[in-house]
Figure 1: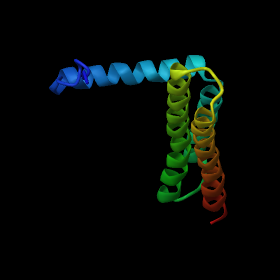
Figure 2 (figure 1 turned 180 degrees about the horizontal axis):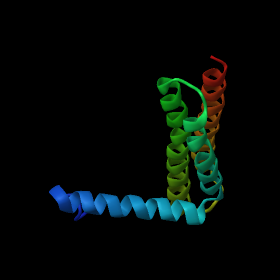
Figure 3 (figure 1 turned 180 degrees about the vertical axis):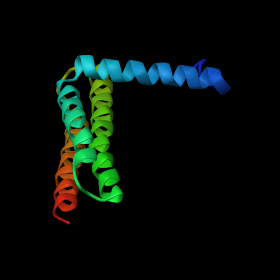
Figure 4 (figure 1 turned 30 degrees about the vertical axis):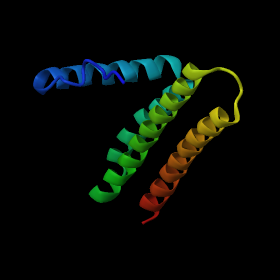
Length: 123
């Protein structure tokens, strides 16, 4: 099996390439994924709010981490969906399972935000 020609890159070249790929991934997700845009808006509101609220430093860190986790999980879910759609657009039970499991992961990350924020704000 042929490997990517970029796998052998090291040092600054690898870091520069990785940064460029990551920024392209953010841009692509923002352009093509409505859920990612909505969750980015949520993060743009909630992260600054975490700095304004009167909570401990640890609570603030966990609150912000829980919001960032939603974005991470959404990016992974979107990647799964894109890969499944690249393979085939036909309805298949395994494709549905992969997409549903990715969606469930996003839901759990959103529940996590609600629980973390509720507990942080009531303690």
